[in-house]
Image (cartoon, rainbow, N blue to C red; front, side, top):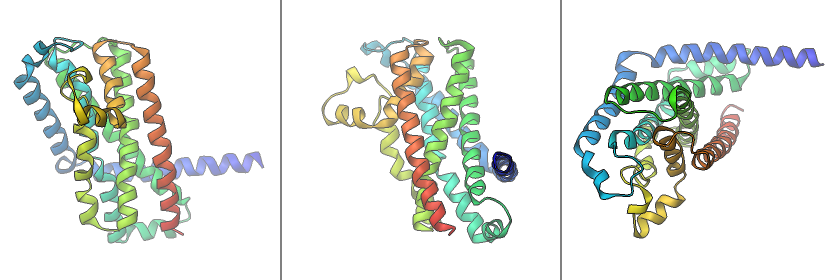
Length: 262
């Protein structure tokens, strides 16, 4: 019995790998992956150069505004491209490729996991590009090489969670237009955070909204790695929030996918 389970597990792993490789080739063309990377890099350079004197207001844990922005730029890049996973799934459905996969003698969850792994890869690539720009601007990463690798891992896991949201929208609506427009729903999550100034400089309803927004804690954890190094209380809080997000959204996505392919 153990041998059978092991064989099934290896089969699912192999199937997921081939679907992931196929989806990665589809996504990894210049017209698809370059525009989000260019936009994220452009926003980073513009914000960092335009608002560099903001740190004089006080309350910042660094005098380098470029370092302060790194985590938020990574987060917004992942959020903005989160709808790609749902859009890609709908494209396969409309083209008939998805039906062919369902008829193939493979585990159906390999289809879903193969798509989600591409989302994680996309998050990693976006983080790598932004970190490279930050290094070129002279940002000093207090977490060192291990901290940079942790940032890339954070981006991959966060990208996985956010892509689950777009797949959920795609499976519920079956609409390309709704899935493409879903990124508008994500705007509050990335702007109602400590994106531009620390929490101490916020007030009123905005400060309350920032406190209940889970993306704030992910951003703060990544920022702590950049600016302060291994400030564990902030990092662990962000890690737990990320894990809970991934766990909950994966359960919902898997459930909806099972219903859609039953």
